[in-house]
Length: 62
Image (cartoon, rainbow, N blue to C red; front, side, top):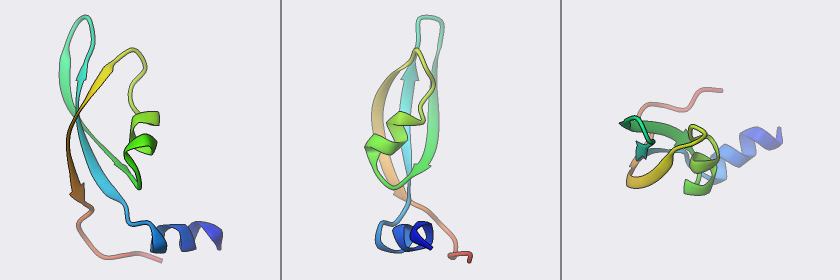
């Protein structure tokens, strides 16, 4: 129950980052409620440059 209440009071966003590593750079999208949560899910060994926050599209599923 606590998980469903959490998403109702804290909407999710799609966070867009430029992920830079020694060998490449990629634009990645991570769905999370906060930027900190998104950064915690980012690839290891990459420098994450914030590029945008977009609302999650679509309806809520139970």
